[in-house]
Amino acid sequence: MSHSPSRGAHVRGILLDIEGTTSSIDFVYEVMFPYARSNFSSFLEDHFESESVQSTLPLLAADLGFDSPQALYADCCEQGKSVSPPVAVHQALMGLMDDDVKSTGLKKLQGLVWESGFRNGEMVAHLYPDVAPAIAAWRAEGLDLRIYSSGSIYAQKLFFGHSVAGNLLPQFSGHYDTTIGHKQDPNSYQKIADDWMPAESVLFISDVAQEIDAAADAGMKVLLSDRPGNKPVDNSENYIVIKSFKEVSNFL
Ligand SMILES: [Mg+2]
Image 1 (cartoon, rainbow, N blue to C red):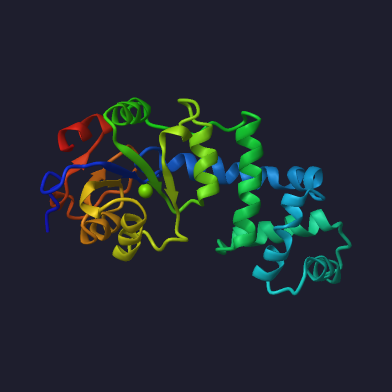
Image 2: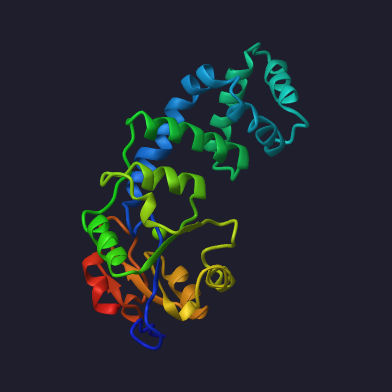
């Protein structure tokens, strides 16, 4: 199948993926996740009693099968290690990350550590050099821009609020994450269209062929992003591939 983005209705909105599209996949795996891992301990020591941390602990405990945070702390001590609650939580987080468990509590705590890192300038979100100029040009042309990423909306806002090109958040009119649905499910793109504008007026750009297929099935126009470090796409001849956002103007 071939997806032509030039057919039909005029593009009025651009929906962007992040990893492999606006930004390097490596930044997430080689900067953001390691930053969280190496800063959890000091972050928990400094902020354990804060409401933002305390409110995540019941979620974390539930993800680990405990009725309460207190039960999580007690389990840690029963293993013969009498440790403080922040240390018990740190150990639990390390275990969840080592096992790559999809944990809501872990995700929320990672978000808090990333927030501190972005706010204090220790992390600055990567963008390919063509991204911020293209976003500015699209906005100047009156296009509406939104993000759809598997990273939480909270993390997306931190990311674009603290990028190498400064605060780009005001350029986006909306954000979607997997709470609206899986990125490889056409229904997710239909729900985004229902929330935003007709699917045929939206151009979706992503590096993952299955996401491109799903968006095209929902009626969106699509472009496949090929950035340095992306995984090679099978059957890439079936897609319109761009290497830079400078090429997008050819399809508007
Ligand atoms: Mg991606």
